Image (tube, rainbow, N blue to C red; front, side, top):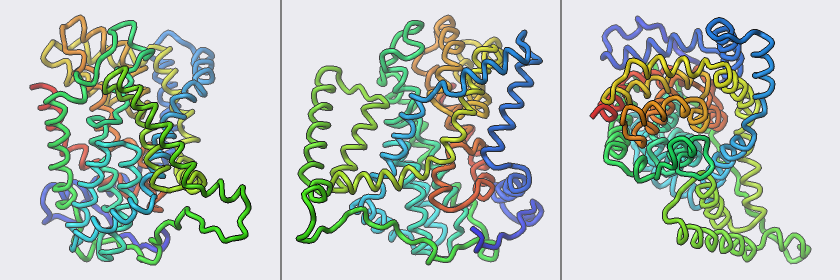
Amino acid sequence: MSDTTYPSPAPDAGARANPITLLSRSLTWLVSRYLPDPLIFAILLTILVFGFSWYLTPHGPADLVRMWGDGFWNLLSFSMQMALVLVTGHALASSAPVGRLLGRVASIAKTPTQGVMLVCFAASVTNVINWGFGLVVGAMFAREVARRIPKSDYRLLIASAYIGFMTWHGGLSASIPLVAATKGNPMEKTVGLIPITDTIFTPYNIGITLALIIVLPLLCRIMHPKPHEVVTIDPTLLKAEESTKRTLDASASPAERMEESRLLAFVVAALGLGYLFLYFSARGFDLNVNTVNLIMLIAGVILHGSPMAYGRAITNAARGTAGILIQFPFYAGIQIMMEHSGLGGLITNWFVEIANKDTFPVLAFFASGFVNFAVPSGGGHWVVQGPFIMPAAQQLGVDLGKAAMAIAYGEEWMNMAQPFWALPALAIAGLGVRDIMGYCATALVITLPIFVIGLYF
């Protein structure tokens, strides 16, 4: 955002501020100076994991280079699933009905502090429904609020949207609970399938998720800068996306009429709904990554109204995956180095060995948070940590569903310090990672008790 002038974020600038505001300013100052671009962050992590693997495991440089290269393209299938979660969520969020809904909801906020609270609340709720949808709709909603309330701090609005991402692993598109419930997942032979009734639909998960939905908007309100420190954006730079629909005239060819056919859109939707009916009739309410993506695709096709209108929306959405596409292979390489060298096991076992039945979920949560710096993927966590945490939980008599959720919570919590999943929101907003991560790191600190209490009791 070259049109924006940023005030100095020095930590002593708010000596009279409340502790949370002072913490936010201090972390913003640190991040603005020392956090590199996410691609550089991934490269530095590659070097760090390589060094620790060489030092702490019996593998030499040649072995580690081979592991890294073998693993570089190892998660292409999972990457495609995650990309579809993102683009189908974006396409649905960019449909005209959802856009009108965003405008009506955004009109509820009348002041800058109400704006950041509303954005965070909306992002928190939509991430519970679907993380791809929540990431995108949160950023788009933040832009809508910025248009309507010009005196809002644009950085915090976008940060509020990403902070709402902290609820995703307690919701319906949570990758670890869904993968754990899906046949053929890496841990099925070891601990069997874990139904979502033991993970997503448990009292402790519902309690943690509701606590986050309540606390996070209040935290964003507290972090809002004073009027003279607010960083705004020219509302003319926040133009709404153009409609993907095309109006045909009488001279349109048969091919063009097929492309814009509402009938074909409904045929696709009917096929998808028919499949989902048969699927759920046979297996019960068995949500997994693929069924969630299909639901989002069907809804998007219906709301956009024609195959090509939806195709154009997908084209627009795919642009937000650019940063992810270049970085995900690096993280795949890191993941395989950690897995095959044994470094991931050393880290996890260090936490597990000092645990008992009561403290195990909390320590597994911290292990997951630590590993998330190198493997910022819920499904990746299941691959790297599942083989160590789940058998240990089974041996100690820990509830397997809670052990799986501990891995999930650690991943979503540490996302507030790991910029990987902020990339789609930042692409939509036109901001850089240093603009928002100070606020996100504050959310990391403040929400820690919610996870610890929820997992311990």
